[in-house]
Amino acid sequence: MLFSSCYSVRIVNRDGIPEPDPLNTSRDFYKGKKVRILDTVITLKPLEGEFYLIEKCASGGFYSFEYRVTLGGALLSAITFGKKRKVQIKYVCLKESN
Amino acid sequence: MATTATFNIGSWDTFHNNGPWPTKILYETSLETQGNMPLWFDRYNDAALEIQKLIISALNNQEGFRAYGSAWSMSNIAHHKDNMQYNAAMNMKKTIADDELHQNSSYKQENLFFFQCGNVIKEISKFVFDNGKSLKATGASNGQTIGGCLSTGVHGSGWDVGAVQDSVVGLNLIIGDGPLDIVYLERDTQPALSNVFADRIKARIIRNDDLFNSALVGLGSFGFIHGVVIETEDRFLLKRYVKKISRQDALDLAMTLDFENANFKIPEEIDENGKGNLPYHYKVFINPYVDDPNYVVELMYKKKYTDNYPDPLPNIKTAIYRDLIILFTKIAERYQSSIPTLIKILQTSILPPVDLEAIGTLGEIFWDAAYQGPAFACSIGVDYRDSNKALDLLVKLAREEGPIPGIYAMRFVKQSKATLAFTKFPVTCMIEIDGLIWNAEDNNMISLAQFSTRIIEVLQENNIPFTLHWGKNADWSFPGIIGYMYGENANIWKQCRSTLLTEKAAILFSNEFLIDTKLNEYTPNQNISVV
Image 1: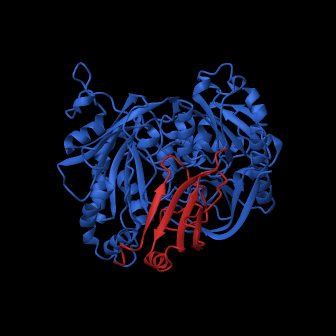
Image 2: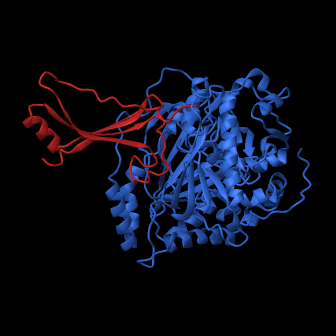
């Protein structure tokens, strides 16, 4: 139950080149890549049913996008009837092409 | 204006954690935005000035300076204790204009491209693909910067093609802090670009074969490689086959590269006379701890490009648990005898699946590397006719003095013109030993350093001429190793470096790796006529 309720989904741009970060020494997929993290709770108003997160990449595109599904996030959404959405996202922009 | 961020990092490590080593400063240089500086050559020349500012700073502080890209090398070749400049964001690229081709060039204008140092292979492949072209060769993956590829001799297994540097026909180097220290270097016998191009990048032109061939695999020590001219070819596809064939057939092919008359043939790759087609690529995988009568081999054949082929890349890619790899390493360190079993368990994840067939462009077949963790790699170049003998010796070494947590492979590369190319034999067989970094201290296990020394000793004792991959683990301090591998070419390389660089610049662009190998030796007043 715990494992199946807490996992990540990562989408990677097949032909993209990630924005590099020489200071990122993590030992995972993100090593050497410039990672941006969104970790927040979105509160929707009574008449609102969906939302957009508007992010900017200098290159104009995303290299990868990882969405984390957690048990806590699912419970929060359930008990607030979908009005509070826990968002945990990691993304990497495309490297600027020059 | 281009800008550089400064980080007082204290220590620096390679991508595969082969360090760390003490390091004072890491610089990260970014180009001026295109909106603020729209003209291509203005931006490029502005970046050159920014690099010269960093060089001035290092010279004023009597310190060294070294550029690096993706940090994929496993030796300390990319490291400098004083100033390291990360140049991945310096990735300008262009086609060659009509007036930029040298009037005596034997190269086709449409095949030449100019790339700034920080372009990684993947973006170069994409750029040339979008112009209807393909690189001739890459390494086994695509994340290295072009500057790093040249400096360390990155190669694939194109036994009739060569390594990455063998497609490079011009170099733009920054060798000091003055206006005359921006040079455009190419072969005198094979000029590529015109004086007009050199003027546009404000470079002094040097056309000299010896200097070019020496700077081509320059170990990061011939100045700052700002840009390179690459010759490409028309797009092509590679048909990839993975087969399990008899050990004897695999090794016979390694010794002869006679694919036409080999016992082993792929039915789809036979000509009208029943002879085998010549592959673009041949690779043999060997588990050193198993007396397997069959080996896994990988062959690739060049095919005419078409848009209509199935995508060779899976749209779902999985990876082994990182923790599992750490666990395996710990088990291997504690129980040496478990290593052969662990390798057998991991083999299915390491080796490509047998009977796999795929077709794709060079960039698709040699796509993103999956493993991001700690790793070692030793890579030894021998004449392909010595491949079986050398392999036997190195397998015996692992069995009798190991085990070590690694697996072997053989790849084959055409001879390079670069003075210090480790692909120096008519066809070089690169015997590769790749694996997980281990800690030998706890259990009387042979260390990587000891194993690296023994590789040299064993091959020397058996009179097998060999070279070592500049970007991989080796005993670079082994007495006389450079002279043993390269003979007079090592002296030519040093003479050329002493000709091109002032003594002050030679010290600036030296590092511990160069000192260990004694390639930092400088001889003033060399006689090579260059300008």
